[in-house]
Length: 103
Image (cartoon, rainbow, N blue to C red; front, side, top):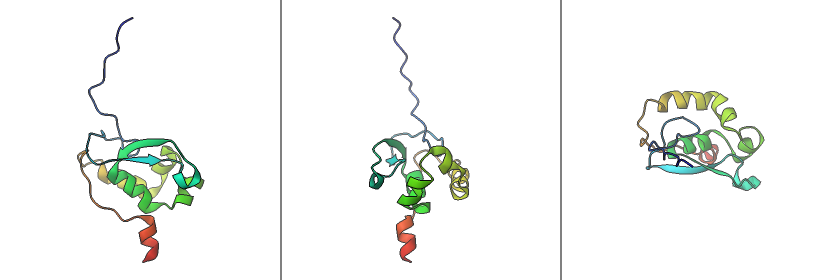
């Protein structure tokens, strides 16, 4: 049996499609932990923060629990278009949906 080659390129972020690299990586639950979601996916920290700045946990559970559904949302599409031009290591703080509602 022939050994398989190990890929030297990092995996891609499931939201923006850029290489993940090794810095500023989070894990995202497509089904929120508060709704008993267990499966986690590596994702850029900035992409993860963007998701949670746009959607509440309930919205993620009810509607936006797939990568396709997330990418279809206008705010996320605009974000992906913007972040696609950034280096994989790029990170900047983003407000969360919960902090927006308190204002």
